[in-house]
Image (cartoon, rainbow, N blue to C red; front, side):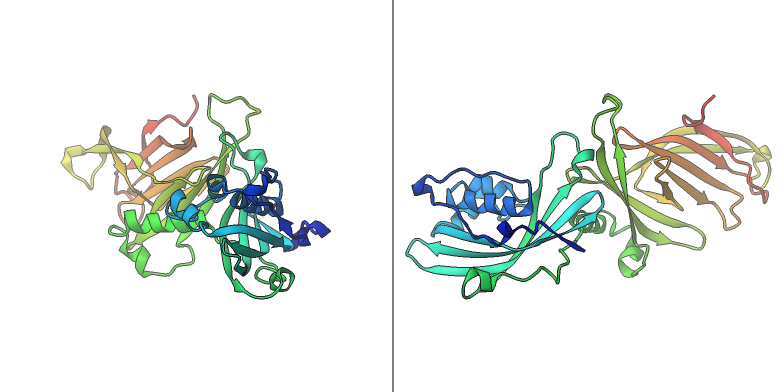
Length: 343
């Protein structure tokens, strides 16, 4: 962990003039310190909508509630310390020590100190709408004395709060959507309970020099039996929006010679499609942007169905499906759908 932004200005108190003094407008997201200065500039100028918008997650239940929290505040002075930074999943996360003095309308003053956590998604891979540096959360407590004395020396001994908020939201969504069908996932504490992959991509209508969009794919362990393991998937877009994935799966009809399931396969054909919320024995390949499944029909694995879904246009599309319906001790599948293999 290395400190950033170490100029003397980091330890200068920011005195934003009150609205009555018609102070200068400041809206700067170039550094964590500048963003915090802009935040309290907005508060001092009573521009609460602007202050509210600096947060990734609303800091109050509504803008009106946020504004009411400052109804008796006349002016806020700010002191910032040395920010620390850490990379995480295509983003830079900053932790910034902060101390403030809030002066009330009746002249009373209160001091608070703590840490702000801020996040900036890699500007080089962002598209539009562009997401600038924003505040993830703030942890402030009452303090006493001068701001320089109240200011924390560092945040978490120099380590920023790197809580992956998107992952935590994905966990909550998984439990809500899949909790009933995946009880083992909620009962067992596995190291591979969840896998996360970042997918950089462009839409087909975009030019080659268009900055890439960034999605995150989460694979959650759902449950396991004697020889199969199931997984559920959640996809997060570049704005943090989350959606559980469902996968197109062919419904097949298998015809055996003389109607004997232990005999030779006469025909396998698609008779329809379903949408499955989970995949069996699945895996994601970041090099090919494909999800694959391998559903064993028995432990030997000689009878099975397998699928391939490729990521394009911001989601996963079924491009291949194979079925081996013969219980002959060998793997000799029949391809019933193939939009993936070239001629």
